Every structure is written in C-alpha cells, then in structure tokens.
Length: 197
Image (cartoon, rainbow, N blue to C red; front, side):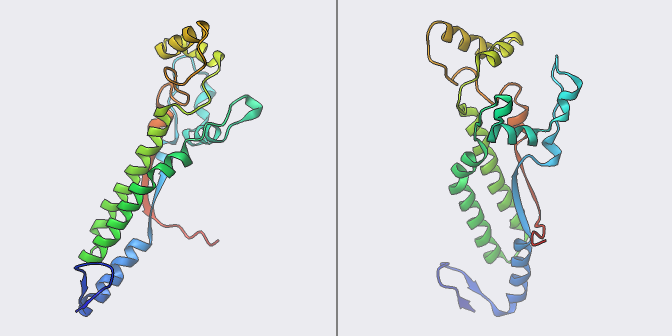
C-alpha cells in the first residue's frame, strides 16, 4: 500500500489499481448539464394564448431573455451565467467530494450522487437569480397585460409608478409570470458526447 500525497488517509492498494482505473473512467465519461433539457423545454398554453404560442420552447425563451432581442424591444436580462457563477463554490465542492469518494470507495455508485449535488446547486442558483428580479424592470405595457390577467404584483407596481415611484422589480419580477420558464431549469446527468467532431 502507498499513501497518496495531498489526500490524508487515502491509501491505494496495488491490487485495486485496475478497479480504481475503471471507476475513474466511469467518472470521466459522464457530465452534468444545467439548463433546459428537452424534457422541460415545452411550454403549456396559458388562458388567452394563441395556438402558436406553444411553438416557442422554454430553451428558446430563456435564450431570448438572457441575451435580449432588440428588434422586439426585449432587453437582455442575464440570469444563466450570473446564476452559474454564483453556484461555482457549491458545484466545485460537490465535484471535489465526488472525486474524493471515487478514490476512496473505488466505486462508480457515488458519481450519480455527486453529480446530482452539483446539478441541484447550479439549478437552484439560476432559479434564485430569476427570483431576485433580473433588471431592467418591466415595461408599463407588460405590467398592464399582467394586471389584466389578475397579477397583483403588476397592479401594485403600476400604482407605485403612477404615484411617482421609480420602476422596480420588487413586486413584478421580470422572467416570472406563470413560473414555467424558471421551473423548467433543471439538470441532467448523461454520458459525455464526443465534441471533437
């Protein structure tokens, strides 16, 4: 047995090197992806929507809102990368835990658990970023449409603006109306695809 420097208490038995190599290979061929997987990309029609409204997916809508669409007067409201950046410490900790457990246990069983921890950390961080209210505040026309559909926060924001208050995202959050977009953000664990082609 030989101790590996840098990992207290870890000793590798030469007899288990093949098992360790196989487990590391299992780790190397998997990845965790966060965003809008195909399973959550579709959207439900809302009352009053036109039939073609469900032609746009959550993934496409997320891209539009994240980057903006000036020709449609939709400002950029970045939430994916800022959310991912905020998740880095927790995702890093989860992946380090996974790597350490793979070395200690020499078993691929912990890979799913560790990647799940990393995926949930990133998913929650992105959703939290949306919940914070990504600026800029909604346009008056958007607020009026939401208010027409009974959204209390939009009504409150409109009344505050009418009273001379500066526009804010406190009561009417951009990117959250029905919650479909935010709730579609999730993670998947899959076999890594060959990206060299």
